[in-house]
Image: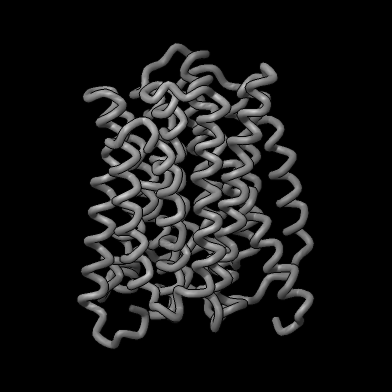
Amino acid sequence: MKNKTTIFLLTAGCFLSFFVFGFTDNLKGPTLPSMLAELHITYGTGGNIFIGEYLGFLIATLVTGILADRFGLKRVILLAGTLLAIGVGGYSFFQSAILLSISLFILGLGFGALELGPNAIIVSLHHERKGLYLNLMAVLHGLGSLVAPLFVGWLLSANISWRLIYRWDILLVALFVSIFIFLRFPKAEEKTQLDFSHIPQIAFKGQLPWFYAAIAFYVAIEIGMASWLVTFLQQIRDVPVAQSNQSLSLFFAMLMAGRLLGGFFVQRIGYLRSILFMTGGGILCLIGGLFGPREFSFLLPMTGFFLSITFPTLTAAVSDAHTENVNTILGVLFTFAGLGSLFGPWLIAWGSELLGLQLGFSINIIFFIFLFTSVMMLLKRDSNGKNS
């Protein structure tokens, strides 16, 4: 895999896949109010529907890490695209909460496979500069996430159904799959048997559990914000539909800008120190946006800037410290990311159901505190200082 053209095309394909990932995943937040209104369901039921996606993501990230070591990354990525198309199609057609949740479960399986594949390819192709390339790839996820609410807001303003909006996404998924079919992938350096009994010995030694905790709480925040920010702004702050969707786009724009800038300084400052500094800023923004005057609502999307580097930088730090069974370890890391995506918006949904949307959305502050604590523990336990 030393052909520069092949490396370029694979890198570009990974970047495109993360644009599709961000766009598809973040259609659900801005379409949530329309979906709740059409089906006449509560916050809690909406949260239960979303659980299907996060459960699928959780399962896929664990399984696909081992599948990638065994069968290669190309099959995993093509499987991801197929699952995305099936999940999006089902979610855009079904009426009942159960079938919608099953569709999101299939969609989540696709997201889980897509989370692992491009990250593992970038680590393999750009080992020396993976911190930079992982952050740049995450910029494309942010760009897709930014475009999604603008796309939704534009079509909803034109009285287009939220279901039709999802159907348009199938074309984007098909484009991503068709491109990857013709790309040559790097051969795996090792083959492993599908033996789940070895996972604890491989993936739960040393500092790894703290990495898993950090990424779980980070994803809980990001997905919680993406899923409920529009609803919070519309129903608590009386922000119009178009403006609330623009706020979600701003959140992802800040994620994108932070990753674009962060890719150039995380290796100089240190992976963990960079995350710790940014997390502190995110806590201040979130508290100000939630409990400050209405004019401070702009601070809520600004939290995206301070969250931006966390996911790709944690991925880089883990792959730097563990070069063997890297796909399996990344699979477990992303499994804990799946746990975060599962419990984050679900706790916000039921917190809002029981305590009101203001307090329910404030659960993100608790997630931020746990993220900060996890990174502090990693810094304390980092004996050689290589990645801190």
